[in-house]
Length: 323
Image 1 (cartoon, helix red, strand yellow):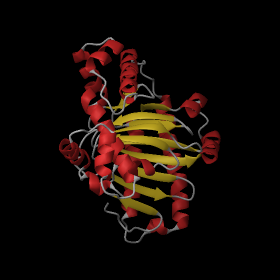
Image 2 (image 1 turned 90 degrees about the vertical axis):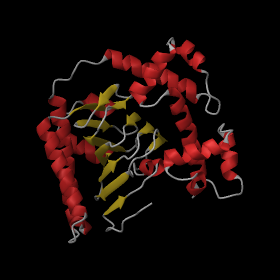
Image 3 (image 1 turned 180 degrees about the horizontal axis):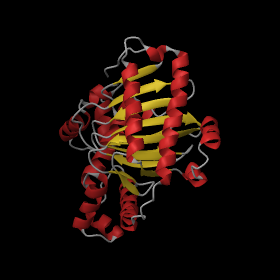
């Protein structure tokens, strides 16, 4: 990993793997799955204020994140770039750039992010967040604070938040090191919280589009298919069985995965297993035969193909993933 040496107030990381992206979301419990090879490095820029933190992420690979947010923080995410549709299965909605999502403490996350996706996420302790809402933004609905939501951002507010994020990035590389000042970060935290809550309030005021029932049903069907595959992590479920369980033709099953997850059922299953091997390698001590043993444990009987597929997906050989 190429790690910069900035002031303690912030970090700028490059060439991040799935596990490093997950680790950046403080106290969350995520399962990452990299769904395709990266054409560029994933990056993370992070500014740590006295209480809150701003994470700016750009993905070089398509990713699936599943799990729960931190139990004691709220997170607001503004999508600043999304070259192709992403899918929030927990909010039952597709999204592009110019969308905002709010995640309550312990909120469910089940999202597919396409390659080239970028966001800015503000994470705030629960009590501080609710005080700010109660004092200055009481219009934000209580149901949204409890369950979270995703919605389109008005154009003017989207431009304003992008300008603010760009200004933070500029400050991070300013030779004068303004973000090394604790007072500057304290003021920045106030400005960030006000700006993100303003965007959220304005997004709430937009006329909500009717719920896409067809898309929601496709997400439900995809969830059933993923559950069937994940229930047999080391042995492929025959396509005929999947089709019979779901009541779909082979072509419809293929379209379901490609349209809503970006990969075929077979590619999804292989990516799951490759990611599982990588996770095991990352938490194992180096030992003779480790890669072979883990590959066989996850059903990769052709070790040459396994090594090639692993290198294609993650950009490194399996042995290099051992920490």
